[in-house]
Amino acid sequence: MSFDDRRRNVRSLLFFVVALAGTAVVSFIGSFAGAADRGELALGPRYTPTAADAALPAAPDRRPGPRVALTFDDGPSPQITPFVLDVLQAKRVRATFFVQGENAERHPELVRRMQAEGHVVANHAWQHAWFPDLTSEEAESEIRRTHELLTELTGVRPTLFRYPFGQPSPDGDAALARLGIAGGVHWKWTSNLEGDFQCPGADRMVDFVVTEAADQAMLLLHDANDVITCSPDQIQYLPRAIDQLRARGFTFGVVAPSPVRSALNSGSPAAVVP
Image (cartoon, rainbow, N blue to C red; front, side, top):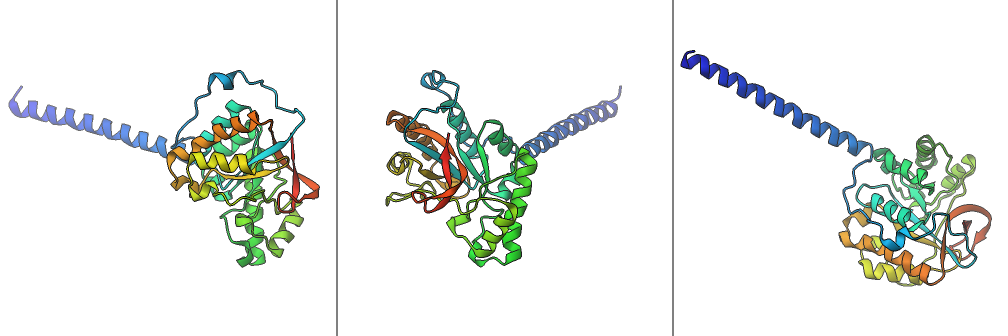
C-alpha cells in the first residue's frame, strides 16, 4: 500500500470518528433540550431524607390542633420545585401550588409530579400579569388558558385562583365566576418580616414561616421567578421550618374553596383542610 493510500485511509478513518462524535454530541444536546422541555431537569439542589424523615408515619397527619397551609406561587421551575417536592415528600406534607401557566407549559412533568404526590394544583394566571391593567379579554385569557392547561396536565379542574401580586380586578372576578373557580385566595402576612422573594436568606425565612404560622394560616412562599435569583442556600429553610412547626404542635393541610371568607387570610374564600 502506497503512502498516499495510507493517508487516504487515515483521513477516512478520522472523518468517520469525527462524524460519529458529532452525532453523539448532537444526540446528547437534543436529549438534554427535550428533557428540559418536559420539565425533567433539576437545575438546583435536591433534598436527601434524614433518618427522622424516614420514621414519620406514611398516613397524612389529621391530628386535631392548629393547621397551616404551605402555598407556593409562580412555579414550577427546575431550579426550586424539585427540591420543594423532595422535602414535602420526605416530610409527609401536602401543599398547595398556585401554578403560573407559562411555567407549567415549559415544565409539565413537574406539574404532573405535584398532582401525583397529592398536592393541590391551583391557577395563578398565565404570565403573572397585573390584572387591574388588563382588558376583559386579556383577563379571561390569563385565567382560562392556565385553567385548560392544568386540567389537561393533571386530569383535574383547578378550583382555586390566586391573583398575581394579590391584585384583583372586576374582569378577572367575572372570568372566575364563569369558570366556577374560587378566586382571590390570599395569605396571612401580618409581620414586617421579609418574604422569600426578597431573598432574606434561610435563617430569616425560618423566622418568617414560624412567625406567620397560626391556625388556618395560608403561608405565602414561592418556587419560581424572583426566588431563583436568591442565594441557593435560602431554600434550605423549608425542611427546617417544617420541623420547627411540627415541634410546636402544628399540622399541615391544603387550601380548599369555602363559602366562609377567612379574615385571617385577607378575606380569602377558602379554608385550610387536612
